[in-house]
Amino acid sequence: MTDNISRKDKKDWENFISKNESLPNKDLSQNKKIAFKIKSIDLHGYTLDEANKSIEDFILKSYEKKINKLIVVTGKGIHSQNEKYEKRRFSDFIS
Image 1 (cartoon, helix red, strand yellow):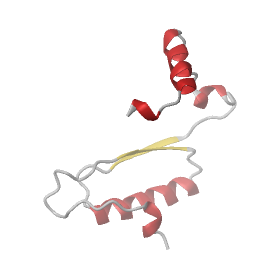
Image 2 (image 1 turned 180 degrees about the horizontal axis):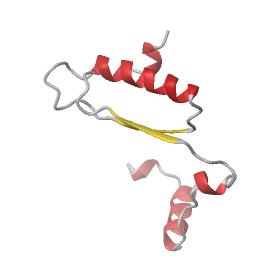
Image 3 (image 1 turned 90 degrees about the vertical axis):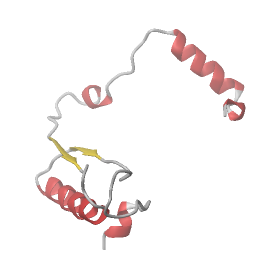
């Protein structure tokens, strides 16, 4: 896998990891005047249809309430007994 990485990229990565600097938190450093409104949803245990309907409602309601940061906890559905996991885009469910 690393065969496809250019020498420059490898050198940049080695330079980065050799320094003991942490990455800046862009949420905090961009504009300290912004007050974040955070809302989260956990979709574990939802069927695919339930999850898609719930996330659509979650996004629309969050937008109406001017929530500016969303946290969505998902899973692949590998433990689901109800339906087979199918990879789909969220946009497939929005009309």
